[in-house]
Image (tube, rainbow over all chains, first blue to last red; front, side, top):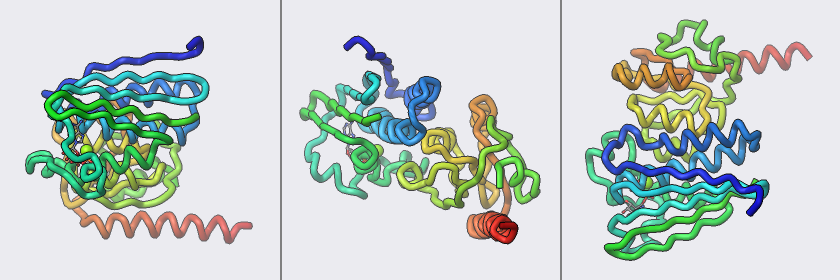
Length: 140
Length: 120
Ligand SMILES: Nc1ncnc2c1ncn2[C@@H]1O[C@H](COP(=O)(O)OP(=O)(O)O)[C@@H](O)[C@H]1O
Ligand SMILES: [Mg+2]
């Protein structure tokens, strides 16, 4: 597409304290582009939850954000363990996060529900042992 | 009430002044679970929490909170405090319990609202 801007990020699975840097960068860029604060907030929240999940549950991965005048599309691609039961994972409160992650304030099982809530569409493509690809769209 | 005005009240110690001292505080929000805060913290809120780490800063910034108020003596470590400053995130800290801090801010917001309504 002609007017599309594409941003790509490699997400490290090692450093939990750095999780969120990609989302922060996208937030900053969208703000600079003059995207409405509501849309920026939706993208920031949804992408951050996805980014954190890649770090906690999938040992990192790649995020590609495509921005057009109509919408912001986020693709989060990892080669982690996959999600065995997507319906269960989507339930508020369901979490397999380990205790040390919980002690940092995560693992409330609200990430996937938040991602759904703050986007106009969300698609999960996951294969056990191969990885997970989540595509989310926020309309501008 | 702006972030700067809250800081001037000496309710809590200023850890990081933030990039936007004139930001209006819309509401008070209390929660320590970051994923819940992420989904529920209203934009422009004063977020009172005992969770003091790098991820708290990320959540505050991404959920667009006006400022963080660390309660019960919770403190950012040196790295995190530095990050709050470089990223322009407003952070205050106090020994007071979560409820007391939240109530104090709520009362300030309420008083301001009443004064404004009294003027018109
Ligand atoms: N990218 C992913 N790869 C593998 N499993 C995932 C991924 N994202 C989420 N999950 C699984 O779905 C569950 C629910 O995710 P979420 O709602 O974000 O809650 P939380 O991250 O707090 O556990 C996780 O505990 C995990 O088991
Ligand atoms: Mg999660």
